[in-house]
Length: 309
Image (cartoon, rainbow, N blue to C red; front, top):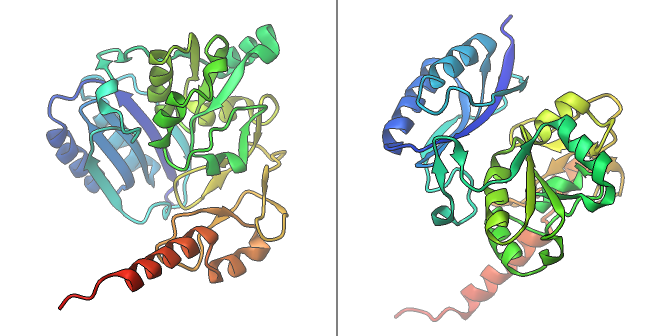
């Protein structure tokens, strides 16, 4: 019986011809029956793919042959064979949509001006040495932090990654500019960019966790500074790093402890709410406040529209 896995990786390196890289990646993934998402830009590659162990090994080995991809950190996790509905390989202006492609500079060594990379053990050592002076800064969308985050972390109130630039420029975090700031995100790619944006805005001592939360959780679980579950962008929705994991999320309908998410009854819903298993059916049958407001606004707009002759 085939064993299925999921691989998560990225590499920042100059890509002279993103379209050619997209076509090559698409051909490789189709050849080995992989599903998931691959994003290519002039800054490099960002991918999350599922398939059998053997097919993924062949794909990763071949992908490493591209200049600048040889030493990329590939993270492996358990898969089901149905973690992604299809394969998507796209060219975009950014590997992560911060809305600031012109601010990012990449050379053969990766992101220029980004935060200092720390291994999970080095993160713990920094906190042990400097205590409460260290600030953990969540580089994910706010809803992801509802079920898990680093202890005492600053969690910006952002709905999308594009909101981060305005958040940083707002001055809300200027008091952190003289403190050691450890940025973190799922696999590390968002923090490559976020840490560079923060450094460019005067944050003096910025770090990022090598391999992101995934690598930290694999090595240290919930025995140290990470608390709760990790939201992931596939059919699993979340992962726990050890049997002792206690989710931080609370069901929006009954307040039970959970790490599960649900969309509402609206087919256009993109608002993932924390909902326990016992309330999931009810949540899927209702319209969430965000969708209700959007539908009300659309109806009001249509009523007020002039009638064409």
